[in-house]
Image (tube, rainbow over all chains, first blue to last red; front, top):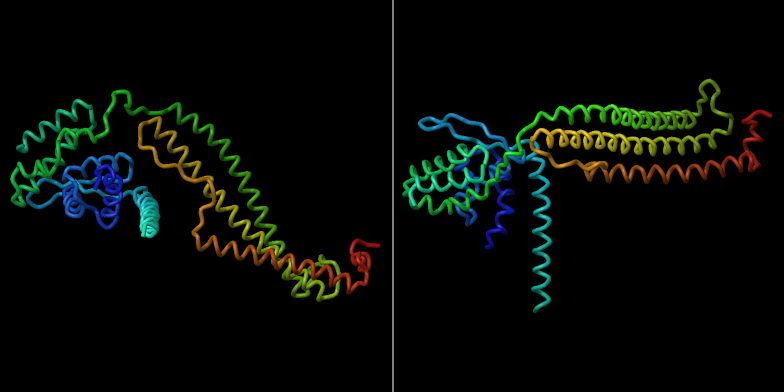
Length: 108
Length: 238
């Protein structure tokens, strides 16, 4: 699928994952690239952007046998934005699905 | 491409674009390599799966020397002045809200007295009980209508204050270089369920008020035998 097209929904996927629990950067990258066909590195600039937009915060946590990991966590603004974007996306996706189906039927 | 080559390419573009906190960004990619190496991937494989380092670096927002953080003292003073006027305005709105609430309570109280057939301190003019009771029901309905209006009105004021607060936050944030938050709508935000319930309550109250008011008028006219029944019952003295 078109790369530009995917990028828009990646933010939504990241927010959705972080709504469940806090994650460190590699976890998020691993999770997304195992579900969606994207380059592993794509997620880091997205995390950065979401943070500077105030949707995410980060904190460092010590792990046994390794450098401290940077965890990402949703802010209340992030939660608010997620709920709003989620509803908008689902509504949009539903409309497109309907539209494509209707046009397919007309062809027959 | 090896790890060092990847990170070097990334660093050079990040520095060229003056991206803030470049070291932090590079650290994140270095950790990515560490995790993948632990899983048994080779450096070349990891770099290939990460994507082109120069293109990745371009995804980061360019820093500019002009966008330094300021204290925004002037803006804060200006906003403080604006607050005095906005505060008075909101106080005025809130006072009107209290008037609506008082009216709602008064309507309902008089209505209940009339239904109960009581006339405290002889404040309610004399009339046959059934005429009074129907007027009482219409007044209670009017009270409910005013109460619903009052809830909407308070929700509106609350949202206006929140929206103004966000607007103010954003003005200061823009001046000091902090992240600007999305603006809030300045109209009533109620849960769809609450909204539907309030609307049907208002409709029922309006209908009850209109029907009972007309019924009461007809009952009074028939009972007094005079279309100007208040003269027959001497409401305003003779």
